[in-house]
Image (cartoon, rainbow, N blue to C red; front, side):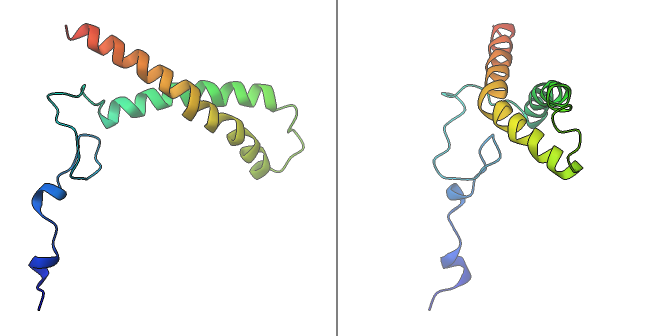
Length: 105
């Protein structure tokens, strides 16, 4: 007969990684670069999203003037989200991490 202790994962399998995910194969902090905090990631994401939304509203606004507000939001996010996720945020995060690494030397 199995007990609840038999079904519980070993403590090493539930340890949280610095990024907040759990797993047994987390890299050791001694060999990997410091992971940005959730606050740093939020700031970098906001620095990417705000200008993209402002520019998107300015550029796409006249084209979507007669659209329902939900469709305008859909059109804007179809442009802004992929740009932010695949282009702007990775570049800003790389620049930020480079600056942070230089300042810690």
